[in-house]
Each structure stands twice: as structure tokens, then as C-alpha cells.
Length: 348
Ligand code: KG4
Ligand code: ZN
Image 1 (cartoon, rainbow, N blue to C red):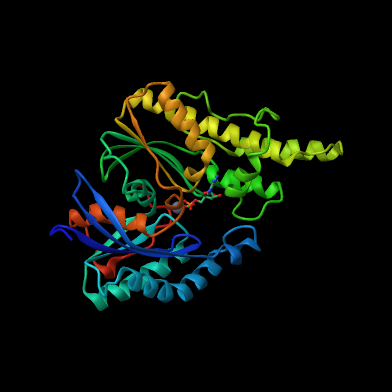
Image 2 (cartoon, protein in one colour):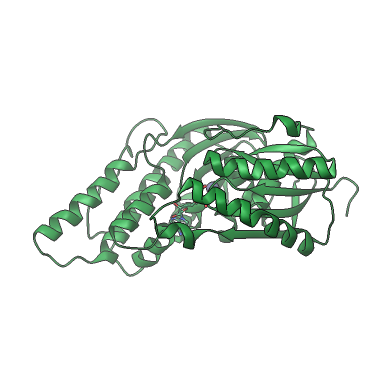
């Protein structure tokens, strides 16, 4: 372990995953490097799938139950008794869920007497790309497309910690649209990955679904019209008692959603001419989105290098929170544990 490395224990409870990770960060802002010593995620999917979505108070109950178990596993696996720094997600997310992680972190901060970083969940999704040991250094300025179940945004970054949001969804998030359309197709929650699987055997040109705001001059998104178009198509087919190819619907929806995401990202790259493009958030696990972005970046000869996070680290985990926390720790941007608060709508 180099002299300057920091061992960070991160806690993430913003939605339906109880996650604790221990990560060693080094290299500073110029060449940040991370080693995951442990990353434990307890998923609540089974509990929430009965309700077709996350129930905040159920999530809270489960987090409280899971946190001590997940912490012990993470410490044992990392073979440490006490980290140098704690990082805890304070937003954005479901407030009752966020508070469980925060209260847990408060107890640990008192017990261990170590500094705490109040971490932003979206900054975690952005930093997730750094957890791939084979990733090339990220050059700035950087453009990031963050696509999760709760957010869809384009971020311009002049360095780590210096962000400007240049566009975001006006209604549903991309992941939310995937989940809602999956539900219409009778797929289990969370539907995004299930829909992607079904789309593999479908025809993406079978239904000409709309591409909302694709030609608008700004960098904002809208997915609610696309979701409604799928709903009406399914209703019309049902009224006509026509056979519905669910895989065609899934593939056509995915094609439309990915078209919008890729096209907006490319226009942003053309305007801002950044040196890198980073993808983050659960939807960044989508293979079609990943390959389309790769293809377009090459074809358009953009100035940016593409950086994709490892698929398993795109969805919620605590290692990404530790990575984001590292930069704050290096700047000594700590929060007194007594002042830690949940901020459901925290911005980047
Ligand atoms: O980042 P994340 O784990 O949680 C939030 O912060 O919201 O993202 C979860 C979202 C869900 O909407 C899920 O359906 C979507 O990411 N997702 C996918 C895929 N894997 C996860 N959407 C499309 N294709 C996938 N392969
Ligand atoms: Zn997330």
C-alpha cells in the first residue's frame, strides 16, 4: 500500500440495494486508481417484485436488517478492522432508505472516530468507470451520460468534482421507461435487463415508435411519450385480437430509446468537443446502448475516448460510492457526522 493511499468504507442505501464496500484509492486527481477489497450488495429485488416497484418503507426495513450483516461481510472480506474514511450516500434517492445508511454511518463514525464524506449517488455512477483496473486514464474535459432508474442526464466535467449539468429528462428516466414498458409486456421487476434479453430475438424495425425530443436543439430528454406510444400500440393490437410479438415490441422500444440517448450524446460531443465520454448508471449495462455508442464514436471520429464501466458495476453498489468519496477525501471535504442529512433530490 503506497503512503498516499486511502482505505474507504462506503455505504449505499439510496434505493433497493443494501451495499457496503471497502476500496483502496490512490493516485490523486491526476491518476486515480482503485482496488476493490470487498464489495457486498444485498438485493431486495425479491421483496419489491411482488409490488412491481420499490416500496420505500419496505426498503427501509430491509436496509436496517441487512446493514450489520453486509458490513461484517465487507470487513471480513477486505481483512480490515477500521478504514481511514467513511463515505455514505446522502442523496439523491428515497429518503427513508437514505436515512438508514446515514444513521448507520453516524454510529460507525463515532465508534471509529474517522472522517465522513457525504457522497452523491450520481457522482458514484460517474466514478464507477474508474473501478475497472484496465481502464485508460480519463482526460478532461469529460462528457458523461448518466442513465439510471431515477435519472437521465448529460454532465460536462472540467475535472473530478467540477460538474455542469447540460441536459436531463423532462419526465421519466430512461431506466424507468425500460421498467414500465417491461411491466406492460408482463416481465418481472426490474424489467430493464429482462426487456433487453427479450429484445435480442425481436425486430427493432417492427414498430416505428417515436423518438421524443431527438431533434430538439437542447440536450434534454423525454421518455414518457415513447412509453405511452408502446401502451397504445399494445392496446390497439389487443382490440384487434392481433398476435403480439413481445420481442418485436421490446426490440423496437429499445431501439427508439437508444436512438435518442446516442443521438443526444453525439450532439453534445460535437458541441463541447470533450476528450472523453463516460457512461454510467444501470442502463449503461444495456449491451445495445454500449455497442451503438462504441460504433457511433468510431464512425463520427469524435475527439472523445469512450470509457464504459464494467457491466456489474453499472447498477447500484457501494464501491462506486467509495470511488466518488475518494476525491472528496483527498480535498478534505468532510462532513461532521452530526450534520449528515438525507437529500432526496440532491443535485450533482
Ligand atoms: O443505477 P441503478 O441500479 O439504480 C438507480 O440509481 O436507479 O439503475 C437501475 C435501472 C433500472 O431501471 C433497470 O431496469 C435499469 O437500470 N437496467 C437496465 C439494464 N440493466 C439495468 N436497463 C436496460 N438494459 C439493461 N441491461
Ligand atoms: Zn443508481
